[in-house]
Length: 167
Length: 167
DNA sequence: TATTGTTATACTCTATAACTATA
DNA sequence: TATAGTTATAGAGTATAACAATA
Image (tube, rainbow over all chains, first blue to last red; front, side, top):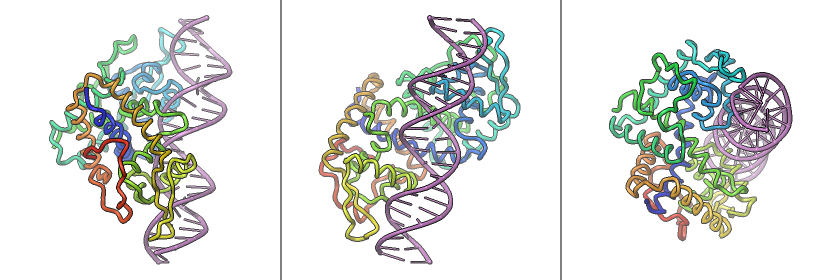
């Protein structure tokens, strides 16, 4: 178990890391807010799914998810197919336009991070990724673990824009 | 230099880490939003300062800082003394009530993190802290580096609520 | 003129609660 | 009755721009 001072410091670091997130969000195209980008990223990574599953992955209330999904659907980046198993639900799926946008987003993110972290080794970035995933996992965040098998998780993404990494 | 896939993964991790921040923010007392907590923490850690310096540490626009400071001042957690060197400025300083609140906040943060990260070693939390600080630093975030010497940074905090750690 | 800080306005993200449709 | 999802409403955080006071 770590010392109190380490936890206090971690609380400060987490508070301050928002600045990095904001910097990163600023590289997004004007018509694509961060919430939309998050939806597209998860649909690319985990394949088609329903609202409830997406809300779980985003770790936000379903009402919030609903609005984000409505936005990306209005922009024409995803399709919403009727769910044969449950008429209350629809299957959310990234479409070609969404995939194209995601490619653009990924490029911008990578370029920005590569520019800022040019003196980080591959291993160091990997360690940070691992620890962040573990942090999320420790917080009871199911999103950091291997995706649950869901009824509608059957169709895996054909070819994720972002190469697979141990999520 | 790390591989593209590592940067893409880091972008995803940073996007998802917001869930942890929200979880952590939920343990704050109802009358103390996260923005207020951040102000108090920085005043405790870096000692009295002016708006502009605080905005720099928070890494947000001064207009945002102004509102956060107004809130904590209304709540009676800080004092604003006239700046003898510049009549446009005021010196912000944590007062006893603010220090007492911060003690409470720190306790809640530490307790929450200790509960969630009970299987993390001291060294592991330390490593995460170090890497997060480096990440902020790499993003040109001055807050992660040793505090600049400022005209009004002379009065160091008597005894920070949170024990000092290499910020 | 330039700088420090405040205020007005607008936008994004989030949560709670009320509601509809279906299970 | 319970669940999936939507919508209305409210609150927090942030940025830009216009403004006031002082340097």
